[in-house]
Length: 273
Ligand SMILES: C[S@@+](CC[C@H](N)C(=O)[O-])C[C@H]1O[C@@H](n2cnc3c(N)ncnc32)[C@H](O)[C@@H]1O
Image 1: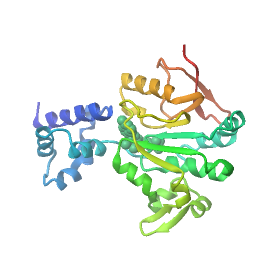
Image 2 (image 1 turned 30 degrees about the vertical axis):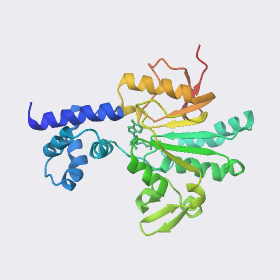
Image 3 (image 1 turned 180 degrees about the horizontal axis):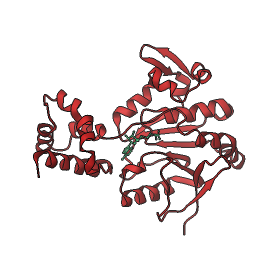
Image 4 (image 1 turned 90 degrees about the horizontal axis):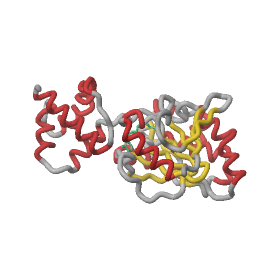
């Protein structure tokens, strides 16, 4: 094995152990590009000495930053549209008709926050009477992403991806770096550091859970374990949204697959024996 392959193997093992993420062997170039800035910051021109430093020290801040750097944070406002449309037209009205209890919505793996803010905007726009009691929990394993979510600052490019001019002027204010979500929107989103690959901290009963475009990074046993714990976190009839390329197919978990006329897909929690 070359030094390079051994260093990459160490990184693969660390990111799997710490965040459940499987980095494929043919993605070595990706690891290199994602970690080159951090390596340079530590005074190294290649990855090997950075890995040597990680190997020598007990797990700490630098290891955590390496794991974070190896995650993929691609996201956008109202990503894929259909889930948001179905929540607006059908699912939230159904939940509100069934119970007067305030809604709790969890965006697990929220990246830089566009997803929880899209949910907050949806609630404000179409269900304004429940906006002040609705709890939106935005979690991620990455502290950097959570700090971005909390701040709610987006570049013009990020805002253009999914937010109309009308919504931008209602819910964002101009700042030096681009746009920031208005304080009333930020007040609706509560950030929490939650690693999906380990036991969840105590959570309120969840009505709607968005865990989109993250299960693809985990292996089958990890997905099974996460879906089982998500089933427990949801209330009766709780709703689960996965990413476009993800499903519960092949997993022994109690979810019923639902689709709407507009082809949105979601999962409804069933009672298990
Ligand atoms: C591709 S983004 C998805 C963002 C958003 N859900 C969406 O669909 O647009 C994946 C996110 O999952 C997070 N992530 C990766 N492993 C995780 C883990 N073990 N626990 C929690 N979040 C994790 C990453 O930090 C990243 O922000």
